Image 1: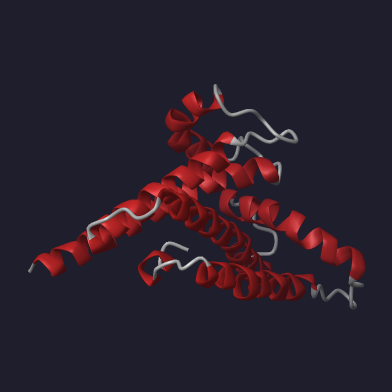
Image 2 (image 1 turned 135 degrees about the vertical axis):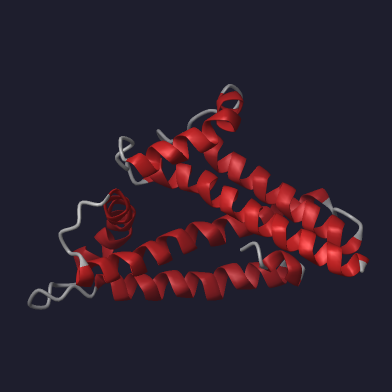
Length: 197
């Protein structure tokens, strides 16, 4: 019975925690891609993260014009989620240094996934609603443009066919498979924590 309750608690924790982690990391991505902060979705992300980011900004400096407090908050949220998951699963929170390393790996994996799934949505929208001015479509395009720009410089436009998303997919997937997964394995990340990546 207790094992079942712990499993259910882990599921709820990881589901709700991962959702908030996504929102926090999206706050960092928005400024990274210079998204339109008047977009209603951006406004929601700002409001959802502002209470925790406001005090962090007082102690964490900006870097290269980026507000690093949102990235630091994402790592902190990931650490808390991983520590609570380990506590529920094994009765211990584990070594803090390992938690920090696993959290950085997890946040990096989620960062890549944001761009990966944004590209998928962008490709679908280009087929079904190419001229959409929906706030969601606008935000997806703003996220994808920086990821696609380097590939568009080296890949010619093949008669109106843009293959840069395919190359971006391949690079993002290879980074996930060869870098993220190997780092997780080499650092001894427990399987239960990989669900948070």
